[in-house]
Image 1 (cartoon, rainbow, N blue to C red):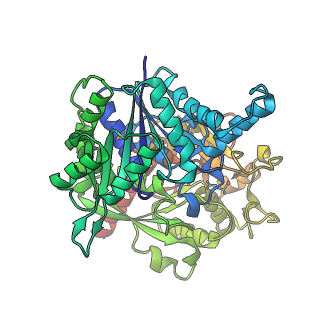
Image 2 (spheres, rainbow, N blue to C red; image 1 turned 90 degrees about the vertical axis):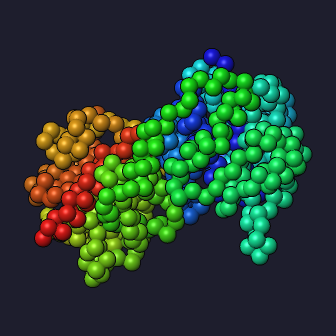
Image 3 (cartoon, rainbow, N blue to C red; image 1 turned 180 degrees about the vertical axis):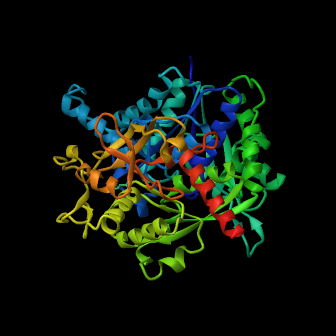
Length: 540
Ligand code: GLN
């Protein structure tokens, strides 16, 4: 199968939504029957984003094969419902690492190793590697960063060479830019776009399509002006107006025929008209909820909109499945304590304690879990959230004073959460957690089993610590059920409270696997329990 390649670059500013545009285009092409994948190339020196904190980078998304990746891969999976892998996210750090390893092995046979050709060759390799798998007709590669940045230069040069080598009908470039609105002048301004395209042209690349991010609709005259000054066909200037939800963007792109312009340029047949019926049904559900539920999200990065991206999106999917709008109430774990917990959580119909690292905010999470446990508030603990639910139970229901995770207190008398055996010799921080998909067996008749409707599941992990099986029988005897176990290691992956309407903690990250087509059952059941909790209060 010969593969066609689409590169998506960004100009003027960052945060224009390249990931959403790439995912939307991929969705339209997929709906026409094309097999498509999306790749993100990130121009930073970290080998992967696993060592970056959420202030730097937002959420770290994890794939089945255990790659710690950019959160845009989450959008790709949520839109396309197709899993991604390590090959879908490559950073400058990884590229340099590969080149330097080759150099040490002597692969370059005495040559001087340079950015051109060695780094650019490696960039091209990363792109063609996906195409050469023989399963994708179209590979969309999103270049992180902004055109004109020093660190983007090798990528742009690699794209230039790649287009020359593969032929201009096999490779195209979509450039995403900003058309700002100047309030004082009452006008949209096209000049930054013109300059950004000039920068690309000076690096040897003429974009084929411009996607213009804007707060106000672009008039025909503005589109014409942009087309004329940037050397773009009239129908290839596409407006990307601020949308009320990211899930509107594929429809907005379809209305402007972005997919048709792309197929024409790549000399590909249009095949069938894309049927986005299911997608539109989802949007109708999203925009016409029958009820609203409030779900608290407790974490220490709640002020950052990208830190818990996949959880927020999973709640959107789950809301639509329940004909409900989920209002997420962000709660900073450091601001929560036993005194204010009733007042803060009293209005909620559900609670999630988020994943996380380190002891900052731990007490707030424990106080919240205690409240959820004793007040029948539907609860889902994810990773650290599950670990906290075990700590809370051990302290308050088993009477193990000072019970803790050794991550928080290395000297705790009761290490109910301890370091995994295979982690004890680990020194490096990068890429060394328990990462990626693992099988979990569910006990029949438990809440977990009812939620999933089967006895074997596979979920993605990202953690170093685990439930300590030395405490399993004590905790079980006191009422904490361990309902999901890793069959090959015996690690506890799920805990729940049979006496509670909905209380479940999972060591893995279900949020990574929720998509528009397949909302995750843990989230749909949490929202369902929240809707029931709301109805119960109304009836009372
Ligand atoms: N810090 C915990 C661990 O490493 C939980 C990690 C997480 O929530 N992703 O085990």
